[in-house]
Length: 216
Image: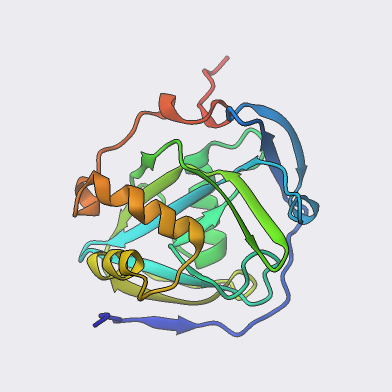
């Protein structure tokens, strides 16, 4: 049985994509341009750079989120903690921190954000809208009881669920989550049973568009 110690329901509001830009990439993960997030998603979405993050508390529970029903892509779908897109020139760890703050009211400052699946990518479709992303996966461990303030434009609800419960139920099909999280879980299990011990991948394994650039 799922151990849910905190469930937060958020009243829906209309979505606002706020003029964000996404980085377009080729099949090898190299940057080939930028496009407005508000217009890039459709029936023939070009491949672009994104990220997924799994937020685990000190008790080994995963923060699971349900996407707002007003979102244009995969509305109302249960998924991992957070996803997003880096802006042009923004590092993926910085984008994770920014998105955690704006989407979940979650302050990740000073916490290690570990890269665990640097080459993950996927293509998925719902209601005629396609996601097509080079989507490296990160994990971050947070203290138990860390404050949350989900943005209703992005998140319908959140809950803390034991990682092992989420993992097992996703794999046996008893918990329906986003297709990308399902695929990610299948790869994450190969890293070990405890997210705290998942090995960190080097940044050099990231797609070229996401690799850090030397200063100067």
